[in-house]
Length: 232
Image (cartoon, rainbow, N blue to C red):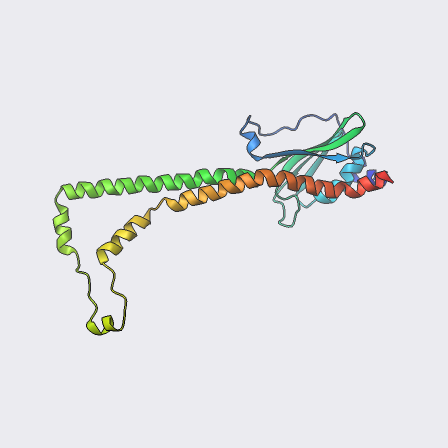
């Protein structure tokens, strides 16, 4: 096939072997994306990889071909890179009977970030709860020492509107004590941390479904022309 020409045919090959790298059972599954794309059984690895060349051979990408397997690693991928989400991975061809598939095993740092972000924001929320509890304990200790009497003396009376402003419908001034209490309660509120943790966890769940679909879609599109050519 014409696709076999070029850098793929010249690359040294070796027996395919499992990809190496960071691996911890179950934990490793958090940011790995796996799947398969059907290909024409008559397509050679060189022809398939040549069709994937525009998708993978971008600036800062290292490629290695080992038999019917291709391993790549992207260093600081550009934003316009269609495969930028998957910074490294392995693609190989499996043949079973009369059929063949291109399998992929990819790593997505974006998935890992979405998984770790909820833990970070839950930590912030728990820190806010701890600080609030500590401040309440400090206030209780101060009240036990008789400081509330001094605070009552320093409490400013609620200002009143003059009759003209009241007649014109001007809003009443806020109670300084109530305003201060609301400010103190909102200073270390844990709710934003819980909200952001839930948001990123939802993004992670969405990514676990969406990223394998995107990987299959992009690989299928890159191989489509080759499949049609082989069918002719």
